[in-house]
Structure formats: structure tokens, C-alpha cells
Amino acid sequence: MRVELSESMSTELPAHWQKAFAWAEDQLGGRVVAWEPQPRWRPACFFDLETNEGEIIPLYWRGARGEFHRDTKPLRKEMAVIEIFERHGVAVPHAYGVCEDPPGLLLEKIPGRFSLDRANDDAHRAKVLDEYLTDLAKVHSIPVEEFEAIGYRRPPSAEASCMGETLGFEKGYRAGKTAPDPMIEFQLAWCKRNVPKDRGELSFLVCDSGQFMYDDDGLTGLLDFELGYIGDYAADLAGFRTRDLTEPMVTPLGDVMHRYGAISGREVDLAVVDFHTIRFALLNPLSVAHQVTNPVKSANYVQYLGWYVVYGRCGLEVMAHATGTELDPPTLPVARPSRRAPAIRQLVDLFDPADAGEDGERAYELDRIQRTAVYLARADQFGAQIEAEDLDDMAKLLGMRPDSWQEGEAALEELVLSSGPERDADFIRYFHRRLSREESLLYPVLREQQDAALPVLR
Image (cartoon, rainbow, N blue to C red; front, side, top):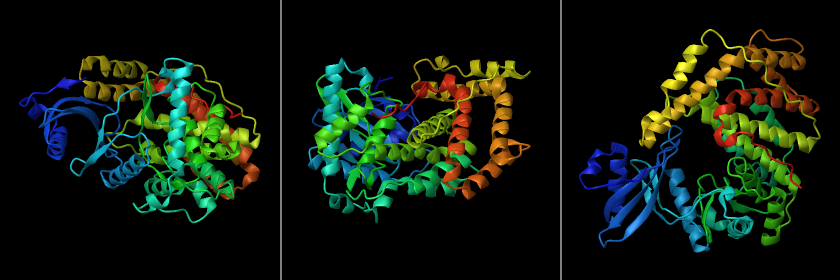
């Protein structure tokens, strides 16, 4: 909810935002006169600053990544990237600076809306999409030396280029790993064995592509570059494809790939885009695995678990298509709630976001907890049968039925690490069944990820 601020009201804001706004006022000269928090997993808000000359500047505060880290180095690199993009005529929000305490990047608030399913009609959608793909091609044509000058590294080989940021995510995953994770280990091994060869052309990549704003007239700007790196341009097409899971493009994605090729003059190899789709989708499980097994208090647990499950499952489906593996998805068993079901139902009711009224941040907190309660209610109804079926599936791979899921996880990870491509089809089918079961428990609280799929590119 947008709030108009008087000078006296500014002292009533949370201390975090008082410090952020004081820094912005000092940076630009003026006073914050209105603000609207953006409840999400990282500190963020919109606000208006009235300059000393009376001009109103709409701004956006993009905080550091919450519970993951408070380092401003990624934000400073992102600001430097934005400055390069501006010089080359790419539509981006202007960056006003980086604050150290609290850590945040101060950006121009660009007008419009996101997600092409909200376009006025097909002609409007096609216009915005062409403008985005034109700017993306422009990004890919900027000499990589300009990004090397601000600290980005050129990959040492074509294979390293195609693995992109995955190896860095793997390093973070292993540093935070607290339990066996055979699904991640299998997909990592598959990607390393199947990395494309001879992809020598290098470009700067926005990485988490497909993020942009537009209005009735067209594209207003590209967003979010903190994960950018130098690598194979086809990776950004894969990122655009996975973005379609939560922000539908409506246009067939095979057509989008070919349109990018026509605009950029590059040949788009759909098999390479498939590889990058699998690899890029895996970044979600890699980045949240430690929060799924050992969440901190502030973690949005169901949101992270949803990312882990849905992106893991979708990557396996692309892998199945690429390898000609026939999948065997499971069915949800009959509900058998335990005696604890009434207590869990009460927990769901106790954390109703509607009770927060117009307090957006409080509503977000209640929603975060209620989603976990709904997931637990589903686990109470179906969890025992699902776990038993999963152990039965493990037995087919291991040659013996584990006594517990913990024992099964450890044994299955050992099997994955000691196996070669001859077991790929078995693992693809098993992990797809396993993630599909978990997704069925999460289904009521998956929100934008409900029924997410990655159609075959044609």
C-alpha cells in the first residue's frame, strides 16, 4: 500500500527504511514524500523523492539478497553493468548509487507492467517481444572487454562457457550442503557429461533473462542483472524459456527462439537451448537446497521448496525429451489424514493474511507461514503413502528397500555418483516421479508455479 509521508511520519518507519531513505535523501538532495513496500524475499520498496528543486523522482530500492548475504559487491557490479547498457542504448533503469548500510541499489522506477500475458492483444505482445529481443541481441553484441574491465572473467574454454554460472552455484551448494541430495548430484553429473562443444562465441549474458517492463506503447526497460556473466548467448534464451514458467509469454517459445535468430543474425541451435534449459533450471535447486534442508527463520520455506521441486522436475522433463526417455509420472494416493489433522487445520486459519488488513509486510509474513501450514496439512493427508511409494521406487534402483528415507537418500547418492550414462534413463524416471509426488503436496500453495511446464521447442 502506498503511503504519503510527512516529515514527522518518517520517524515512524522501520529503522531499516529510515536509514535507507536518509541515505537516498543525502544522495539526491531532497525528501522522501511517499513509499510503498514490496513484500518479497529480499528488502525492496518503491518510493518518491521530492528534490530541493521540487521535482518528484520515482525510485526503486533493491536490497541485498536477504538471508543469503548482505554483501554489496553484487549490487555494485550490477550498477556498473547498467551503466554499460545505458551507453549502448539498452533500455534500463538509471542507477543512482549503492548504499552500504542498509545494503541496497537505488534505481529509477521504470513505468509499466511485467509478464506478456497482460499485454493488450497479440499485436501489442508481439511488439513488446520484438523490442525486448532486439535489446537482448544488443546486449549480446557489446564487446565482452567492457565487462572484463569491471571485473567479469572470460571463461577459459567453450565447455566452461556453456557451464556458465553453474559451477559457481555448485560451489555454494557444496559449502552449504547438510544432507545427501541425489537428485542434484544426478543432474549436475548429467550436465557435465553432456556439455556442448565448440560454442566459441562469447557474449555478456543477463542470465536471469525475460525480466522487463512495458506499457501500452512498448518496452520500458530490462531488469535484474546481478547474476550476469560472460558465456554462450544461448543460455539467455534458455533463461527466457524458464521465465515462461512463472510469467507466461503466451507466444510459442520455438517461435521466440527463431525470432531472436532473425533479429540477431545468429543461428539458434534448439538442442543447445535444451541443454542450457536443463542447466539453468538446476540453478534453483542448487541455490535453495541448504534452505530446504536447514532453513533460517526468515526463509520463505514453501517458496524455496517450490522452486526446488518445480524447476528440478521441469529440467528432468526437458532431459527426458533430449534423451528419448519415456516418463512414468505417479498418481496421488487417497487422502488419509492423521489424528493431528484438526490441529494443522487450525494452524492454517490462525495465520490468515486477511487479518493484516492493509499492512502489506504483515500480510506477507502471515502468508509465508500459512503456506507452510497448508503444505503440512497436505503432508499429513498424503505423506505416509507417498514416502512408502518412494521407498518402493528406490528399491528398484538399489536392489533393496531402505528402512528409512534418510538411509535411502544416502544409498541413492552413492549409486548416482558411481554410475555412468547407462543408468540415466532409470534416474530420470525415478527423480521425475519423486519430484512430481512432492509437487502434488505443494500444489495448493505453488501460486504462479501451478501446472508449470516447459513445452518442447519446435
